Image (cartoon, rainbow, N blue to C red):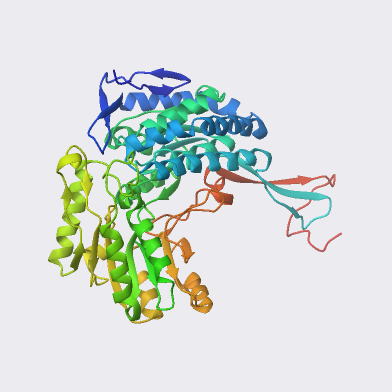
Length: 496
């Protein structure tokens, strides 16, 4: 019998007030994996109350001790890596190599930020007055509401939860209803590692009920969201209404530029992995290939031949690159974009159809799809499709390539393939994106490097790397006057 998971509130696994559950479905087979609580507003309120109660003692726990819990959690993740990867493939659909990579990403960021327990650096600076000391320290924001997506159900919660914990915050966490299993396993691991009750609380359920309450609850001091731009804007507005800090990681329409001097085989490798790994269901997926016309035909021939040989199927099967679409609704959305591409005049080179016969019959599969002759104003060149659909966009030269790359509302990741070091460095400065890769695909984040975008991709926050802690801390400026008398900054400058 499939397991039914409860909410995790105040250190206990408890059923929802609603008494209702929802099924967690394998997108490759249609199999029901387990069940989760369809929670209510009251469940969120209980979680907030638990976090409030836990905050003061957790804040006052020495940061190195908080870090030790994360080190232990990372060791547990390492021990269970293969088990977690298999669960991830069943829940999300990505192949086992990708799933192992995602679990490793969670391990890496947990280890990285655990070390912040002995850092959490502030600054010292000279005072303008004698016998006075100035410094800054970092303090936790308070209670953080976290809402995470289904496409990286382990790594993205790991990007958010450990940094917030080591900084001394308490958390109310809502994983995606399309992939809550790995989020629940992360909570179990942190509980096993010794996290005190109430510090981390998980409430599952719909965005319209659970997510809305988290976004609008006045006792939640900060919000961290990864997902669609439209939902992110709503969460941003909800946080702004009460001046809560909000960190947003949203959509992408990521370009890979290929110049005429590029290593074309390498560029094709990058485009295949960036465009069709995770079935294109990444915010950093390569959705636009901007190709200099001098090598357009040669690149296109090589690329399309490779695309036609991509193995599509259950991520547990050997040799599969492209797994299923997460659910039927998303599948229909992608197919609608393919139809729009045809109607707007783009030329379909391969793919474009749902896979529904035989072994594909119970899952959600779409052929890897390639369009060419795509103009920058077309819908498929502007809107995030979030599926295995790639557009080839011919350009005349480097300058036009940069202009086309920057012609969307998004700015997450961009890539350029060239052996011209001058153009590579110019692109680094000219591309409007938070991340730039040279001779590598648009995907491949590393835990010690900041991650995030500009324009409608984000709101200036960054996750992972040296920036990971900043989203979840406030700076406090401290002045210590040991002169024994009243000193007044600015006024007393130059006076004895």
